[in-house]
Length: 239
Length: 132
Image 1: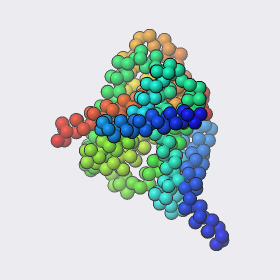
Image 2: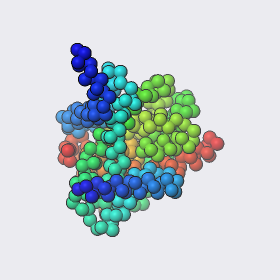
Image 3: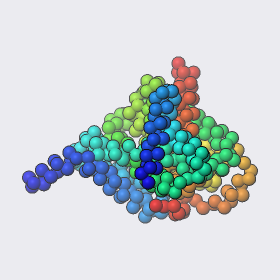
Image 4: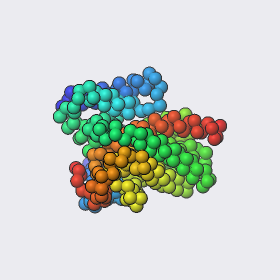
């Protein structure tokens, strides 16, 4: 038993353990997601996060220790975002054809995201910090954190809300789009990208390349739109 | 292969430098994406190996959000304290954003795409292709 303990102490000090845990938990999520026929409710990110959290709690591992290993996965978010240029380039003919519609839709979506998040947060009596951290929730994490910080909210709470928003949009978005009868892949992708940034884009890419390209585009443009709109609106109404 | 990995990292690095230099309200990788896009326009096509590297990254995009998602753990007390406005705000606002964006896009899309829309009646849930 002592020997086992020594091995555990050795392993848990090495980044390899939690890197492997992240990959393995995601594999579990992916298997369930595929078995379910890519049902959006079986979101692989959500399943993987739940598995990892359960194991970290059971082993009393602090998040900082976990992140020493997981950072290698986290790091690849940057290069993957750059790679979104590929589907965008391949779909550029379609993007050009509907340029005006894209800008209008992203602008409308961005305003809706901000106004409803702030409005509901305020109406239900959320603390000021909570409302501020909620406001940029649909924007990709690094930009959302920057906006919150600029306005005096809590950037790390924003990061968590951004991830939860992404998972929520990827899970419920496809069903809502079916209900309102929007079947065009471009519109579906755009909506997922505006509302739920990279996690919505990941879901869109899994289903259709047109949807993935429009989703990646929407994610980038919504980051820009919210970064410009939110501080201005906040100054106007709360200043 | 490695040259294209280097190219992608270089685009991100250039993006980070541009953001740091100009104070633009965008993340470096998003600027890097536009740089790579510009590069593809200059090149005129997607080099085969760049496509392979990029598609590998993108086909595993979901995985890359797991470490940040586990960060929920750190904020459990904060989330619990204000759970009602947070839960309702997140869900309603996200769904409203999806509906508004999709409907505006559909209303303003060029008329020529109506025909294509008819061919795409299969719904996400039943849609199995492109699963890696």
